[in-house]
Image 1 (cartoon, rainbow, N blue to C red):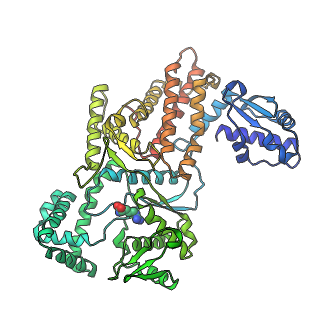
Image 2 (cartoon, helix red, strand yellow; image 1 turned 180 degrees about the vertical axis):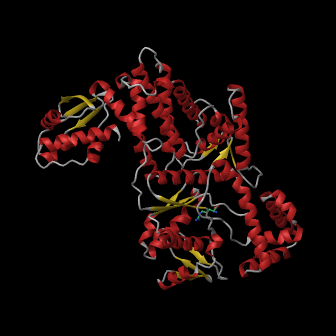
Amino acid sequence: MDMKQIIAGRIADAAKASFENCELAVADVVAMLETPPDKKLGDYALPCFRLAKTLRKAPPMIASALAEKIGGEEIDRVEVVGGYMNIFVSRGNMAAGIVEAVLKTPGKWGSSAVGEGKTVCLDYSSINIAKRFHIGHLSTTMIGHSLKRIYDFNGYTTVGINHLGDWGSQFGKMVAAYKLWGNREEVERGGVQAMVDLYVRFHAEAEKDPSLDDLGRAWFKKIEDGDEEALEIFSWFKAVTLKDTQRVYDLLGVSFDSYNGEAFYNDKMDPVVQELREKGLLVESQGAQVVSLDDYNMPPALVLRSDGATLYITRDLAAAFYRHNEYKFDKCLYVVAYQQNLHFKQLFKILDLMGHEWHKGMEHVSFGMVSYEGRALSTREGYVVYLEDLLGKAIEKAREIIEEKSPNLPNKDEVARQVGVGAVVYFDLHNERIKDIDFRWDRALSFEGETGPYVQYTHARCCSVLRKAEAYKDAQPNYDVLCDDEALEVLMQLSRFPETVRKAMDQNEPCLITRHVTSLAQAYNKYYFEHRIMDEGDAAGTAARVRLTDAVRDVIKTGLYLIGVEAPERM
Ligand code: ARG
C-alpha cells in the first residue's frame, strides 16, 4: 500500500465520479503521476493533458473537475495550476497510513502473492567437483540465493538447484592420480585441496610420461561403464567436495533443494538427441553431431562428439527437459557468469527451434567478474582467493572492530560472523550484477558509506531506540509530528519498498534492494540526528517517532534478509 497507489486510487475514484464511463486503471494513473521538484508545488502532480484525448476535454477543465471531486484522508488539499492538479498529502495521515501498514504485518512489507501457483527454478552456485570454492563463485551463489528469497517473498514456489559440475574426462585423470599416488587419509584430511594437488601432479607427470593420459582415459571409461571401484572413488571425491563446500554454505546461510548436476543426466540425454534428430536439427560436421545456428549469428552447438561423447550443452538440454517435466516451471533462471552468454543463447535457441514454447520462461541471469584488491584473479599465476579464507578474514576483522567499538557486547563471536559475512555479501550485491566487482576490504568493512555494516548498524540503532522506548509502546501516537522533511524522506523510502521488491524480481536484480535499504538507513540516520526521538513532555509524539523507528527496523531487516544478510540487534 504505497502512497502513490493510494493517491492514484483517489484520482481514479474522482474521475469516475466526474466523467461518464470513465474507468481509469490505478496502475495507469500511477504512471502518470509526477513528483514536483519543488515541494511548494505539491507532493504529487497530475498532468491532465495526458487524459485530454480520452476524455475529450481541455486539461484545465479536467483538473478542476477532478479537484472538486477528489477526497480521502491522505489528501490535505489540491491546487489547480493550468492543466495540472497539484496534490498536497496530509502528512500526518500519510505517516499513520504507512507506518501502521508496515507494522501490521511484521516482516512482510513488500511481499505479494503474484507468484502464487507458479514455480521458478533457480540454478545457482553450481560448483565443480574437486575444485576449491573461490571468490569467483560468490556472485552466482549470493545472487541466486537472494533471488530465491525474493521469489519466495512474492508467493512463488522456488526450486534451488546446484547443477554440480560432476562429469568430464578430468575425473578419470583424478582417479588415476589417486590410484598412483594418493591415500585415503590424506584426501580425507586435506579435502578438495588434496584432490587438486593430485590433479596438478598428474598433469606435471603426464608431460614427461604421455602414457599417463591413456591411463586417465581408461579410468574415465571405467567411470562411464559403471565400474565399481571407479565409481566408489569418484563418488567419494564428490562427497568430500560437498562436505568442504558445505562449510562455506553454512557460513553464508545458503541451501539448495536439489544437487542434480551433470552426471545426473547421463541416462537422460538419449530422448533429447533423438528428438533433435527427428526434427532434423542435427547435422554432421567432421564426424560430430551439431546444431547449426548460422541463421542466428551463432557458431554451431556441438551436441555429440565424433566418438559419441556428450557435452556440457547436451546435459543442459536434458536438464531443461527434466526441470520442465519435474517442476513444471514458469521460469527457469541460470545464475551464471557472462562468459557463458553464448552457451545459454545457444541452449535457448535450440529449445526454440525444437518448438518448445516453454523456453520463453528461461533466462540467463549473468553477472560480471570479481577481482581482489585491484587485481584480476588467475589460477595460473597463483592469484586465487578462496571464499572460506575471505569469509574467515572478514569475520576476524569484524571481531577486531567490535572489540574496539563495543568491548562489552554479549555474543561477540556471533555478531562478528553476522557482520563479517554480511559485509562481504552486501559488497557483492551492491552493484548491478553485470558490472565487474573489485573487492576491497576498506570499502566492504567500513561502518560508513554504503556498506553492510552501516546498514546493520542502523538496524541495531533502531533496536536500541526501541529497547529504551518500552514505556511509550502503548501510548496513542500522534502522527502529525512526522511532518518535517526528514520524516517525509523516511516515509517515502518505506512506502516505496514494495515497488523496489517487485522491480528487483522483475529484473532479477538484488542490488535494487541493497540500495533501497541503504537509502532507508541513510534517511533514518538523518532523521535520528536532527530530531529527538524521546520527549518526555510529549508521549503521543514520542510514540509516533518510536513507531516510525520500529517500521524502519522491520523494513531494514526484511531488505537485508532478501539479500541474504543477517541483522544483529546489537552491534
Ligand atoms: N559448473 C559450471 C561452471 O562452473 C556452471 C553450471 C551452470 N549451470 C548450468 N546449468 N549450466 O562453469
